[in-house]
Image 1 (cartoon, rainbow, N blue to C red):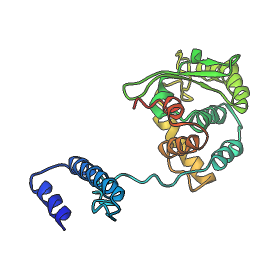
Image 2: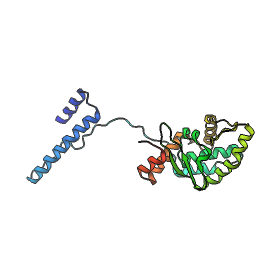
Image 3: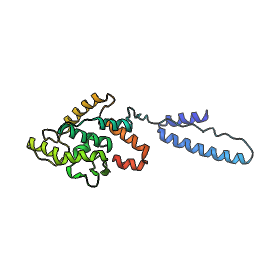
Image 4: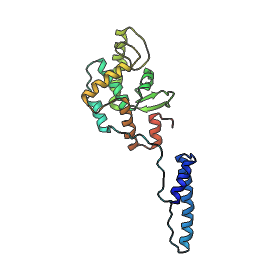
Length: 224
């Protein structure tokens, strides 16, 4: 009861939950010390502060996560029929295997794809760090076809010139309409698919099962 009264005292003095928990931790340490001393004296002593922890900020629960197998199936079942669908599969692969954000997709240049090395250079943004990531084997053939043929045909037909990797069929650099239409079609194939953010969250959650936290931090471009 005295501990609960102490917690109320902290709240009334506008202590944050973190500061109050820090004070409670100090109290637990003190009582642990007393418990150790008394146990040596043959006296049974229980720490009254054990298990008393204040709940802090509400954190968003990550839900609607797609498994690695589900993501791979989405990629494998997306059929290539023409230059448009080949470009879309390139986008899909970069979302599923490299966990890129839509902002990073916009910033990609053709020269960032290193086919011989099997790598891609992802540029940093105001919110993310740059990194070099491995390309999957099933991405390389499509990327080669797109870079050496399909992309050139799109630009030639549109009469435009750009070194941006992913472009619209009209040769524009704005990818919002491209991504919008892509996800409309993906939802028809799999109703569980929502948007690119869901895919990225799923990729990161799946990475955490295979890599340590620092590796995932680097791969996802998280600064902190």
